[in-house]
Length: 222
Length: 228
Image (cartoon, rainbow over all chains, first blue to last red; front, top):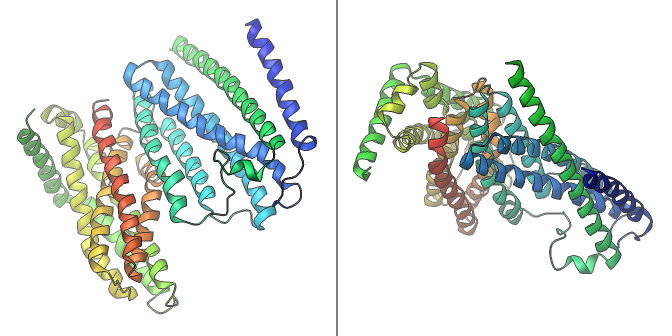
């Protein structure tokens, strides 16, 4: 418990440093209007977390169908809730950036389309959970839906953007990224990615504990 | 279980569904009337001459596939919802294996969707003056697209049949899964109308792989949904 406490404070300091570094340590990147490139340090980690949360949710769903452990269901639902939150944040920051760079908040760029569909999937998943009363049935049916949705995602992320032309800057995890951004950019971005991942892990463990307590109390009432 | 037994069971499930469907025609009416009403509305407001010649291949493809997809969402959940509403699902669980039920229901939905396409697509082309240059490619797109559409809606219908608010949930759950398919099919149909076979083959590859993956995943996951 004590270790977790220290980690929590460390995370706070880490994220504070990342925020300061994002605004003072790096210079605005070339090819971007004004200071708009700084949003990368927050937008990219948010998009990454929304995908990571979805992945965790799917793995937990597969595990649930295999082991039928209610904890896996809790993991899947908590992660989906967090994923929805981060997907909304990524969409909003992306729209702000789009307004500055391309003069429109929304232009149905393939990247915007895929994040919108990810949002729709999360919303549909949570709507399905809300519509089934029996806990076991809810767990297994929503697990099936999460897996079905997961199969759709690669088509959105990899195939749809190839069919349509995109304005979105290349994603960071490719070889050309090094040319567009200098070394300081990469450092801060990686630090931010690590910080946000830590934040996700922290929120996720709290969420799982809260949900477990809630379920236990419900059983005690019954 | 042998393959022949599975096929007989699946065919029996499909025949049963078709027979009960033709008694009430709930799904047929929902699908057909929805499609015809929307087609009438689109044809009345847009008509054959409102859209400029260069925009026609793309915009009419969008309209065509939106009508097909939304008509499918209006009626393809019936096969499973009906079993739950009339409380016949437990008996069906005893009578046939899950895979046979899935195959039978899928076949039933395929019959419905192909029937809808056979009536709607020619009507659409006539009323909107939609000229398709590569007819063979277009027909292949319709067949493959209809199959992928039926596969996805069948498994989602099986899920929502067990939930509380069925009608609204069906579209909500299906649309995110169907959207990539819709994009590919619109792109392919545009190619068919413009006469570029490369666009059709690109779209076909995407639709076939998506339909194929969804078929495999549904076949694996359906027993979980059905026996839960």
